[in-house]
Image (cartoon, rainbow, N blue to C red; front, side):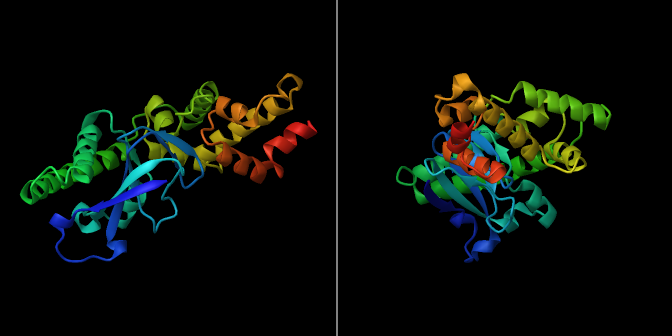
Length: 259
């Protein structure tokens, strides 16, 4: 993973310790994010990911992606510790809405320093920070809403059915699942926690089971492991092989040969 670094120097004249910054990743090309639960989420150029290296939920990124790491003084966001936890790992798509505006401003800041005067860069930084604060408030508000009136047991079955129908979609994620079922991501996680699991674990388990079944079928024994993984929504072959071994005690290739 190739990274660049930028922080809001113009709005923070007093030197700050690293833990006093909230990190924001701006994707510079298509990439893959690995959540704190080990799930893969595909990212497009311009997407924004809120990171906090000191927290367990902070995501990682695939080695072949390029991102700019933007450091914003946490005091500018005026967030509680609970809100920082909620924000960590959130994705704001850079293709539409306020996320697109913030993404465009951040891209200009990371690459436009030579084209603008210091005064222009200062004003752009201030404007970007103001927009980013609004985006954060919007994300937290949306994440806290529960728009569903469906009983929890029915909603769980509805969600699981949606997941089954879209297992092969590499873009399937807690965010897309919550959006399709008209609930917040927070409520989605709460539903699965009451079942003793997480939405990410349930999705990953179903995909692993589908891959294992494909790998053991006679007509498929000559199909490459990576092809099977991609078919069931795994973007990174190395990530798939690692979690397959953790789950079944052998590599996908070993399972395919034994079958």
